Amino acid sequence: MRDIFFDLSVRSVKLNFLRSLLASIGIVIGVVAISSMGMLGTNMQLSVKDQLSADVNTIMLTSDVVKIGTGLGAAPTSSTIDESTLNDIKGSVGQNDVIPIHHTSVQFSVGDQNGRGTIYGLAPSDVPKFLTIAQGSNIRGSDVLVGATIASNFNLVVGSTIQIGEKCATVTRPVVRVAGILQARGIAADGVNVDNGMIVDDTWYTNEFGGLDQYDQVNVVMADVSQINQTEAAINAKVNRNSDVVRVSDASSRLSTIASTLGTITTFIMAIGGISLVVAAVSIFNVMMMSVKERVQEIGILLSIGTEKGEVRRMFLYEALILGLIGAVVGGIMSFIIGYSVVNAMIGTTQYFFTWDSLIYIPYGMIIGVVVCVASGMYPAWAASNMDPIDALRAD
Amino acid sequence: MSDMPLIRLTDVSKIYHLESGDYIALDHVTLDIAENEFVAIMGPSGSGKSTMMNQLGILDVPSTGELLIAGQNVAKMSSLERTHMRRDIIGYIFQKFYLIPLLSAYENVEYPLILKYKKRDTTGRAAEYLKAVGIDKDMSAHRPNQLSGGQQQRVAIARALVNDPKILLCDEPTGNLDSKTGLQIMEILCDLHRKGKTVIIVTHDPNIAEYAQRTIRLADGKVVAS
Image (cartoon, rainbow over the protein chains, first blue to last red):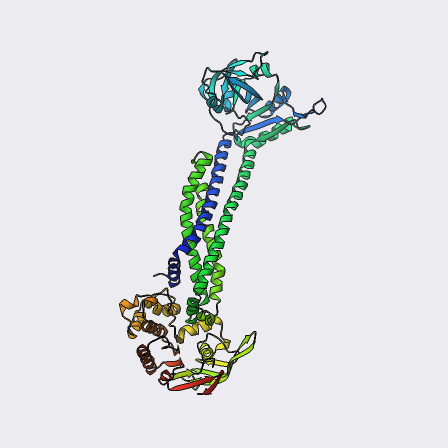
């Protein structure tokens, strides 16, 4: 048989059903806000992590030497990695693959359509080491591999031609043929963002854009990712022994930085969601105070016939708990539905939604909702239990 | 200790500190009420009847003087001990019945048992007391607002009796009832007195006071006749 104080609380909630319902809706909104935002943030984190973690075995090397322009007001520019430094790098990374990369931003035309993207110059033999050709074959001569986004936006197929460079009446622009279309990479942690770019043979690249033996970036693809720190140390020892020649970074450190930033953003948006729970707490407090005020005589009866203060407190806390539980359960269900829709709309996939890291925000939100509700009921419960039974009995 | 009456007031005063000055509701009252007495407390409005009831019902403590109930000094008891004494030794019957509106008649009577034994009644005691005051099983499922005044007062009497208290404190128990129902309630109280209960009844009705063995008259907070 149930506790009579719980029964009294249930009956009080039923008696003031509409008021209780409205108060619980506040909790529902709060729970939905916290849970949905938490799930959205986590799904975002998991999605980005998943995309970036594909390249965590790559060390990215860029020049750490800044060139000072000679002209008046010329901006300092980043230098390149020369052949000698490249050989030092090769000498310090053992059997791991070293991929020298040229890149620049270019304008291009496909038929009448103009576009802009990054063009990468790579040795054809390096392409399969970290890129996947979805359609067609590898580059040769003046062939080009295009990223998935460019291919889609410009309706490119294997055999299509692209004119590279700005349209100019006096200069003939080089034409490249699409040899293959690359698989979409998303945000690439190794700095080779090919979705909106294209890959050409490095010989062709240096013929057109210069920079022979001068590389914009060198990637080291590790056979064993656990050796990444030792390899970085070896590069630093060999290449940066006298001064900083190359900047060494890897995807895992950037991944943790991005994950940490996204975590902070998630906490922040959850805190914004939490504001609605504060509003709900005020509403619950108000409802509980109204309940106490309306039941003063009843409290007087309870106290006068021997009800302990703690039992009166318990009765009102049960009432707050019931409101909290109703709000939390409905809020939990709504969070699932709304969270799913928001994640699908914002991230474009729900593949991470049903993970523990994501769904845990529903019970989190529910628990916070119930705790906030009970906390809001504490002062009204205390006030009720400390009433003078004589004054309370006199109340009409 | 065997000479100790059930209730002893020694020089008890109750003073309320108001903005307009101190108000003496009870003024050096000294009296004894023995076990199994039937006492009526009478007096005009403002004479201190309600204050006396609050003292005897341990809802309040004296400002000065000593109030002993069942040998225990009320002023020296903790709040929780006073609560337990109200629950175990005293049964209250109020003019306005004061049943708990959210509970059925049965649950109202069961409630003091739950307070005392911390569990729902499975002994049938609540039903037994309801039956004794003339409330049948069907009626005991009703909420107070579905009962007549007389029925509510019967339920209130059953509630007051269910924990077998030594003292029955009745504050104008027939005040909200018609004369016929009032007489029935007084018969129940007389019967309870005959069965050994100490009945203290506050009334301004001399006809009701006639049921008592002894009448204590109050005026301006003082006992003028006992």
